[in-house]
Length: 261
Image 1: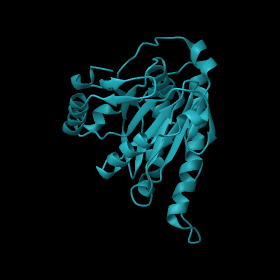
Image 2: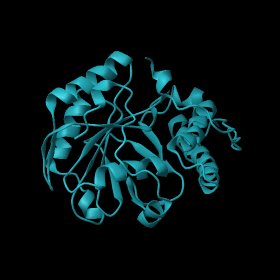
Image 3: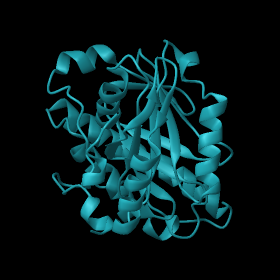
C-alpha cells in the first residue's frame, strides 16, 4: 500500500483559483508563499461551504477541495514553505469529536492522511488506539498496540500526522495541554514525526498544539469557528441536528487498528 492509496477519491469538480502566483522582487519568497496559501485556502473554504450546504457532508468531499491547493502551489510548497501546514475540514473534526468526547474517559486517536509535498498535510483518517489505562482525567495508550499501528503505517509508507485526545471539562481552558501532553509531543518531534497534537473539550473546543515546532492549521467548512490561533469551537447544535451514525468508526485500513480503546 502506498501513500496514494490513502487519498480520498475525487468526488467534485475543482474550483478555479483567482489569484495569480507571481513573486515580485519586493516580496520575500517565504512571506509571499504564506500569503498566497491563506488567499487560496479562502477560495477553497468558500467552495467547501457551498458543498456542505447542499448535503456533501463527508470529510472526503471537503478534503477534495483542499487538495486543489497542491495544484496551485506545487512549485512554491516544494521549495519555500518552511513551516508545516495542516489542512482539514469541519466535518472531519466533528467526527473526531464524536469519537473522542462521547465517552466519559479520555480517549486517544492517531490521525493520518495525504501528504501534498512541501510541508503540506491533509488530516483525513482516524486511527483509534487501544488504551492500557483510562480515566476521566488521564489515558495511556497500550504500548504493544501502539507499536503495531506505527509499524503498519511505516511499512505502508504512510506517516503519522496527528495525535488527538479528549480532556474533561468545558471551555477553552479545558484544552490546555498538560505537562504529559507536551512531553509526549516533544518525544514525537524528537523522533522525527511531523505530528501535530489536538485536544478536544466536552463542549466542542479544539486546540492544536506542538512542543516547540511552529505550524499552521486551516479548517474548511461550516459548523466551526476559529477563536484564536490554533483554537476552534465546533457548533454542537449543528452536529447533533445532522444526525447520522455516531458510533465509533475507524478509518484505518490496517487490521492493527481494529482494537479501539
